[in-house]
Length: 241
Image (cartoon, rainbow, N blue to C red; front, side, top):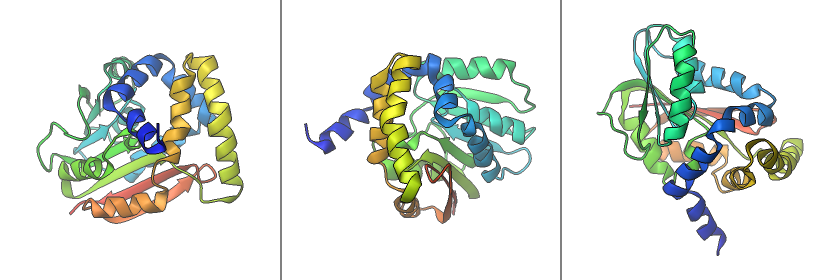
């Protein structure tokens, strides 16, 4: 199979959904171990970047087990947060977390597809995504959908793993994601293939600069980004309209 063919198989929606269903039980623990707990700080930065006005609605797509959606609810009391994911197993865990979370904003978790969001135009003041767009087969459409459901003047926020531009960060990225993470996946999650997919998906994902260009082409404006973790994580923020 060609490299391009392998990428298509990896991003097949049924394949991806089955993979996330398998690892849902250990997903949070793996995130903690892979990032030494820094993923919590990065999600707080993503929530802050949404700059949600008081009482507004915010959508977190590819919400997984709900960490960013719940962070949004904590940061913006009396807003209304919706988390969307296509994995029922992930949503079960997200709802269980929400039931015990100390939050003052309602959070709804719904099943849905990022490439065909089940919401009307201009439904939200902000849309966020953390570690999700890397898994979709059509990035331009994903960002166009996020822009479509966001109010003019609202924000789209994307937190994602990326390839560092060079130097020590790139060397560390190669050692950690290509070698250590699959081993952790086998040991902790019992699924080495899912965590072999992770570095492969990053390698075939646009670097931060190219992702910013793609977001602009999808109709977003004022696109900017910052890096975290030796350049391994990129936080993109853009405005709609």
